[in-house]
Amino acid sequence: MRKLYLLVGALVFVSGCTVAWAAQSSTTHSSSTVSGFVDLLIERGIVPEYAVERARELTGAIERIEEAKKTSGNNVRVKVSQLIEYADLTYAPSEDIKGLLLLVTNETNTTMMMEAKRRCQIIYRIYAADSALVYSSADEQRCQTDERVQYTLAAGATRMFEIEHLQSNYSLRPGTYRFVLEYPEYGYGEKLITVQ
Image (tube, helix red, strand yellow):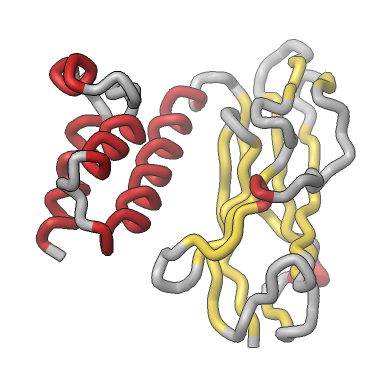
């Protein structure tokens, strides 16, 4: 566990700087990114096998934070809400998860061209109570929406995207889950749902 905490500290430090020595000693990874540095640590055996999956999860979290920092100045506000009929966010084990909404608002005075940065307009990830990633829609062949790759969003306008998680895709057992809904490279939000 101590090694894992040290790894987190190293990841936070490295996320703000380029690791030149690693670039010289390895040609297989880009050390200017956190994931490249972590790949190098894994390759060299510095991260033990049992901690590899957790290290990659932490890397993903750090990169999402860094991405949010980079995109926070793009005048697009992204937040998560839900349809009123699903306000309690509690579902039966056989019930599909419906009613989660990702709201994308153009906070500028001009029309903006919005585009899918990672193939799909919207992606979502599901994390268990222990923060372990249990599902990612980015792994699916089909996107959540049938939106075109690009569309225009008028000044001050908000676009609403509904997320539906089918239990036939990945069945959620009883428990509490954190749904992270993302408009790639524009921002993300999250909601806790309960399956009981």
